[in-house]
Length: 69
Image 1 (cartoon, helix red, strand yellow):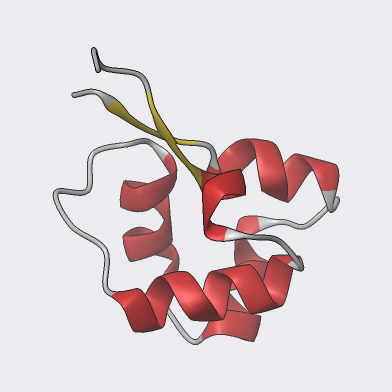
Image 2 (image 1 turned 180 degrees about the horizontal axis):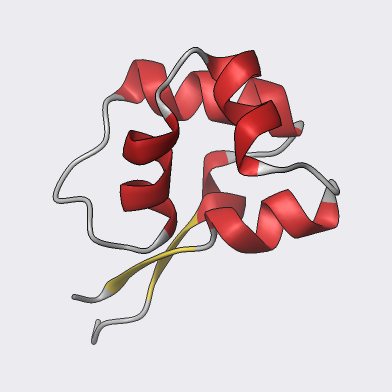
């Protein structure tokens, strides 16, 4: 898949654990883990918004396009 999810990178930069992010965002650890490992097929805009607020970042810090233009 040409979309790379850099959630683990942003969590490391903010020194935030999966448990802490789960508590702040209100999403289960298992769903965050699926997103973090890149196995998610979709992400709600509401979820992306909550993650960005919790991590103090932009959506582009989490999502990266690596395919051909």
